[in-house]
Amino acid sequence: MWLLIEGKKTMAAEITVYGADWCGDCRRTKQYLGKNDIAYVWVDVEANPHEIATVMKYNNGRKSIPVVVFSDGTHLTEPSEPDMDAKLGR
Image (tube, rainbow, N blue to C red; front, top):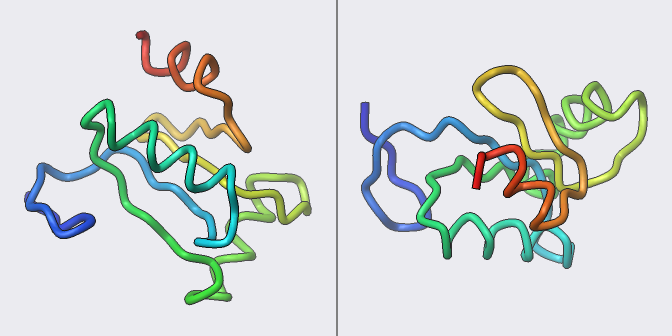
């Protein structure tokens, strides 16, 4: 399966990032994924306000972003680069 992500055709992503363009931590997470050539699906909660419920589900009722959801069902909220490295085995 192919996806078009950030203007590039890529293999299906195993990571979904919920965030907003105004969020500095979200921009940092997207930059980390981009510089490491990791495909992801971006869900803008500002453009898709119904997705805030998904964010709150992962965060025990809090609206903290970004939420990075992995194919194994785990997630990280507001992850640092070391957090992402550890999760991705880097």
